[in-house]
Length: 350
Length: 64
Image (cartoon, rainbow over all chains, first blue to last red; front, side):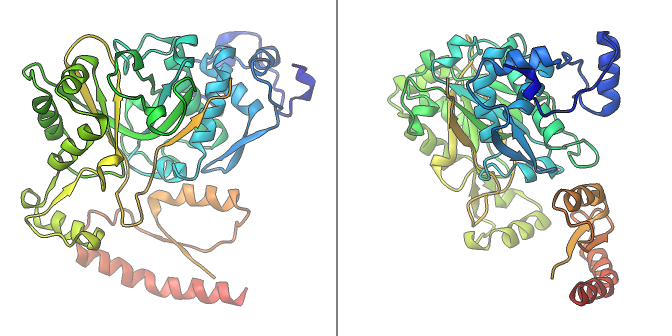
């Protein structure tokens, strides 16, 4: 890749990693962690991993509504610590991020402060060593850590999302630094997410979802699928969302499927039991819910389901040994119009 | 003709949006933050106080 074709501004900074980081921090170009300096040589290496014109526009990133070109993605990829072979995932992730269905503008402007959860499916998980096993939502894998981080840097450096001004997260949460997992397809008794969404099993995809911090759905007592799912559903009680994410650990998945539950039956079983019980909420809250959802004709005996429909629950099998699943609430409201955000899955072109 | 209504916590975001869309003169009516967790009487008071300004901005926008 000939770097003379790059359109980004060249900046001369002292050839010292401390000085470069001080400069980037002063400019507001980092997430607070040190970055790898995006030299022309490193950006060229990143671009050499994909057969794309550096000026191809993958999407437009709010709130600056700036174009995410392949070149700009590559710069942020270097800064995040990505390897060049991650580029196809990053391009697909940027496409998902900027799909209008995700409604990134709202996700970035809201006081709610959601993260972008990326779920990677297909053979690329193994090729890039993207973790879907033990500690999947935690630390320890370069691909997970830096792919998720690059997406955050794209939001910040291309999209202009700055905490306190254009990002109005009241608290945020650590997932906003980086949140990228692989589905543990080998340990799943069901079709993986991408197959459920119409992609071939040997295709690779990335799914972007608006994610609030998770709630642990530990269950070391149940030996039956209905027990695990009933306890899981109780963790999902409370305000609903446009979608909901069940990250089911392999041990739980094996028991649930062993008792005959298909993935769709898992969703239906949980959907029928999880919800926001209007009899338990204060009067003001009840009145507000009535105003927001006139279509539901709520009474004090109503239970607002966790999502509008069972199929809005996303089931992913991930994690290692142990009986520890997690529920991830999806930021936003379910609305009569279909919700304020929707997850987006894009094919990764290798 | 339109006026965007925001609370003052979103002032910087509104400025950024006006710049991004090349509409630096787009009228924005700013009310005190928050409104989601204050009593309805206070919300009404703020709405009444903002109403004249809203009319003014709409009329100005129409003149343009």
